Image (cartoon, helix red, strand yellow):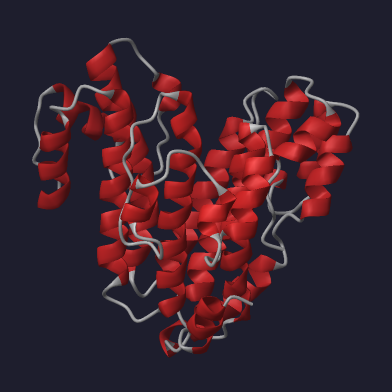
Length: 329
């Protein structure tokens, strides 16, 4: 085990305010979809058969039954995520932390709105109504240059970023801003484990940027506050495993470089993070199991989207399986 993870486990999970929540979560974790379940969905003969399999799971039965059209399976995912965040709202003792997870949907919606304003056209399908702010509210702020969003920091940031004209730069600045908000929220609680997750997210983000530099579509812009300083990444021209010798990422980077498929590379990075997040299952107290469950459910919905989309469009069994990320259980 990585020494950083071992130390994080030993010094986290002390908050007894979450005793009841952890008990609830332990039951809910037994209902999460497993990797073998997703494999069976991929092996199903038809999309209808895979949907039937999902309907036999008590957590999803009602959502499948509520489908007005079988092709509108996106409603299943939205329903599951809304249920997740209703649960989080009920269980959390630290709303500033858990609201950060909702805020990322606002960030994604704002990215889309600003790009629409910059490039023209519409992308209504790109909006997800799961954030803290209503989509119509966000649309009004951007359309009318009204940057007095609840929360001065967010409004000031949007006013600043509205002057940027490069879509890729907009994407990066939003990600940087979101992770800075996450850092500030984490600083208000004592959880070396969540700090470990946060710093790992930064490092993996920078590795992903380094991978994509070869396409010429991404600028050399890296984030700080990870385990590896951003100066390290600025010195790299390509992703070279030798440069990562002595870091926790050497084997991961070697596998990523050996892979020739972008989706496979992204999967390796996401699985690396999930294998850390899984450690939240071993905490008996604290906010860590709740954060772990949020990640677990979001990964589950992502896998479910890939499985059902693949079956609906007739993607091959092995290709669907190869797109699936590690499950929490």
